Image 1 (cartoon, rainbow, N blue to C red):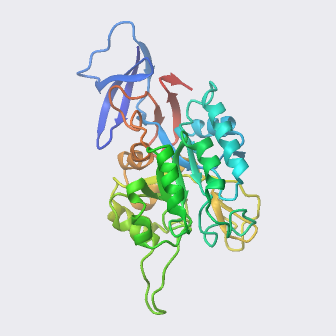
Image 2: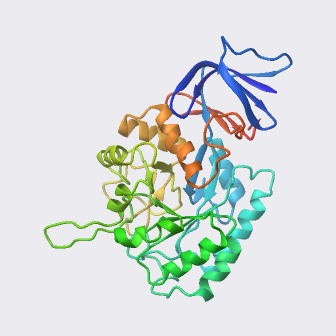
Length: 380
């Protein structure tokens, strides 16, 4: 048994200061304040030296780790995230991937999950292919643009990906998309769906909620705005996500509040509360120079047209920015970057400090700088 001593434990809704936590067989075996919790003889001791100890971070939506595209090279990319405290990763696809690439991605992820270094890979986040090409960084050639949604295309992808697809993102306004959703849901009833790169109406989104649509992909980014009349705004994706308590809002939280303005972050937090927000990194790769006026930005990617193309974030840095922009505490940050994403996608064996759960833990300071990472009970 391993005993972590002198820890400031981050619980789901409170702290336990001057604490001890026990790990046995890769799971959390107990915890409590050191002054009232005896340490059994023979325990291996790990001194946290006053660091905050919380559950490992859960990034359900990220495309790269370092400069590795996760769908192609999941092991080195996910190890990069592990170094930054992310003990659970869902590698994300790209909307422009072909049918053959989706199938190959499933094979790559499956192989990586069986590898000794793939312990933080939990499945896949499939962003596309059935999204609205008018939204997001999508000006490059996309093989799915204006292509009908037909079983001949989606059935092979579903067959290859179903058991690993924890999330499948789509545009609910796309013609025949409900046929695809029914087929994917039948293949894996535990798959969650996300409204993604879309200008769907609330009614189109809500129609898919009984199948498991419960996520708004990068909320307020690549989401359409419906204008009923020139002088007034209608309701669209963002309003539907805000309104529905059954939908989690993903947020990309960069240092300057470019993906989501800090005022909007605070507004969304007030509306959705800490129970229905998920921080994501949406880390991607692009080698275009920053557009004029954005030369000082270091944590965002831009494509050659000057559009935002994901981030250069890791989730611990996103947490730091979340605290900076909203005034959230460490407890709050761990809630939206660990507990909420884990529960949203059905990973109930992780995401908080509780007896019997996986011992995925990170030691951090008050600004989420990583000191130690423990994955499945082992110090990495």
